[in-house]
Image (cartoon, rainbow, N blue to C red; front, side):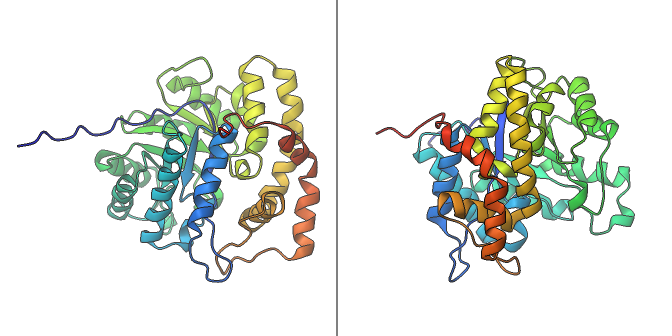
Length: 330
């Protein structure tokens, strides 16, 4: 009888910049554009991102079938591996409204090559989602999930549910809950959580718990608050700039980091307001691919696309002047 193969050890989460990747579609059929999905993932890794998230809100997960979700994660993992980025983990958005349904997505994420899952609170039955119901949900999933959980605090996407620092700290005691993404933008909350759980940060492994800022426009502020990284939709467009802000601060060049943060925050606000269609429009304008969301989301009309271009022009000048951190070998 042959010996069983040992399970693959999880790729550690490192401090630095992560991105919830866009899902790209063919313009004529809305089918998944797999070559573009693969190339985009590698472009972000070459820029210096230390992790990618598939099936986040930026990935149009609500527009995809379960088979398509697994396919996107599988292709992202495969592309990274083939390009030599085996150390870049793939985190997968796997939220459902029930514990049972979420666990099904967690298992599918693991089978597709994901190593961590990112979960928002269930909110369809908002009236019933008190703290104990949410505690039961997250710990019930954590007890049985094959992958560690990262909590996703994003009140705007879940009927206003905003997990406070006491509740997040309480959940952090579960051994299979390993981080939180603070898209609420509350750096005070992030500070309290990071301090209490001894979160990882540059030069300090701590407990290994990850306290992620949720937008690029407070990258330096996340570092000042003791944070571990950024999971930023803007990194689909501006990966090198966000990495540069992080690296400057981590090296002790705080004034230079903040000066660049000012430029980044201005451009990232344009992308935030533009949402998925605006971010995809910027990718199309500056990188030549990916401008089509899946309906009913719309491709931006020409005038709106030009407005996005103008709004991010200053930070794109910075982005284009920066080299890839890990350029392709010639």
